[in-house]
Structure formats: C-alpha cells, structure tokens
Length: 329
Picture 1: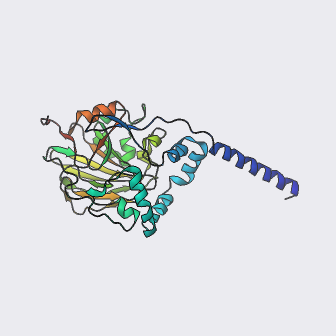
Picture 2: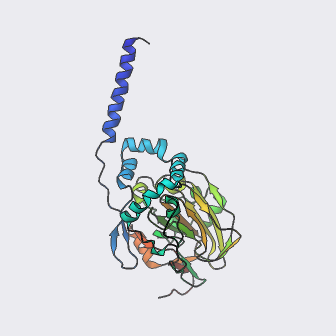
C-alpha cells in the first residue's frame, strides 16, 4: 500500500471516528417520566430509574443503539458483571445503593453480606411479606410494579398497536393456543426491589422450560422503543396446575446485567407463597399467563394498566380471584 492510499484510509477512519463521537454526544431526546400508582395511597408517583441516562442513551442514540446491539444485550456482558457482583470487593457498592434508593434492611434476615449479590438476593424475615390467604385468591409472585391484561387478544401491550406475542414468548405454538385469549400479568422488578420470586397459588409444578435469548433492559424507557423485548430475552417458565386457576404459566425473564436466574424450588408440588427462585443482579420480570376465564384480576390493576400505568405490588399481595367466585370487598 502506497503512502497516499494509507493517508486516505487514515483520513476516512478519523472522519468516521469524528462522526461517531458527534453522534455519541448528540443531545438525548427528552423522555416522559416513568409514572406508577402507589396501590396503598392511590397516588400517581414518579419512579427513580437506576442508570436512567445510560438507558436513554442506549435506546435513543445511534451509537448507543449500536453498542446495545453489538455488546450490551449479549449474555457475556451480563455474566461478567454478575461475576463481579459475586466478588467480596463488590461489598463497597452496597451502602451507596441502599442510600440512593432508600432500602430498608430491617425486613432482611441478615444485615451483613459477603458480596453485592449476597445483598441483592437477600432473604426476608418470615413475616415481612404476608401472603393473602384463601385457595381462590391469587397473589403477586414478587415485589415490583404490575401490569395486567384481562384478555391478551383484546389488549395492546406497552406500546399502542404492538401486541404481546404468546407464541413467540413461549416458543411453543401448541401450548400457546391455550393462552391466546387468556389473561396476562407482568411484574417488573427494578434493581432496588426484593429479588426473590414465589408461587402465586398452590398446585402441581412442571419441570422448568428454558429459552435462550438476549439481555435487553425491561425498564419502560427501553420498552417504549422495543416492545418485543420479552420475546427476545432469556426466559424460563414453569406450568403451575391448580384446580381453581387451571394451568398457569409462570415465567421469569432475564434483563441487562442479570447475572442469572436461579431456580431453588424442588419437587412437583408447591404451596402459595413458597419460594420458587431468585434473580441475581439487575432488574428483571415475572410473567403470569392464565387460560381464558380462569382468573378475575382486581379492578384497580386493570384500570391503571388501561391508563398506561404500572401499580406497585408486593409479593403475597392479592392480584385477583378465581373466575366465577365472589370477590372480597
């Protein structure tokens, strides 16, 4: 290669680099805040999003989107970061995290931790999450913010005009047929939430089905750009068979920087409120799918979802009753 050609290539590379730098620094578009309903007070509040500027850059900037596609969504990034959070050196991240998000450790079984993930996956005291009693009552499997759709076939999901694809989500067309007109419940766990998940009702438990996928963020800031994320991310599901609720799909969905999904339950039977597993570091999601006419979701959750808002929920709190049964006042 002669000197002239080398100079031209160098010039093109420098120009490309300059374009990338300008694009990376391009002002981020303003984002509507993530609003949600506090179920106890009935007030509409604004969520403090962990890593908000980073998320907006990844999903709304051309260089950020390229970085997302080439690197951030991939398993290796989440696995490496998850391993870092297992190291004793990660302890120094715990207190700043507690301070930033106002986490109350008084409900935790222990107060000292060996790593950030040890803190992140902490167990709670037995009385920290009372489980709503009654065989006909379904409860939230996790702490987080909930969306609920009484009939998937008639509901737009997250972004108007984009529907939740049951077949793609389950990766099993024959099984998906049972839920095409069923009920969909989504519980989104932010990084500051309690990250263990539990069974929403008692029943027989199938083996876990695992589907490999990517690790996109499940925060609404990301979902506004890519509503199909739940069908792209890594996910695992179990079928919980109940005499009152039928065959309920309980699925755990991975997300950016989720080190792993850990299933702790063993055996083929489960009690309502019993632990099923936990997520290591990162925000995550639990999805419930009910067959048609098997559950009547509480009205406040449906109304808030219809308005485009999530509702704060805690593990063990009621989300609905078996269809055809009288609802509690």
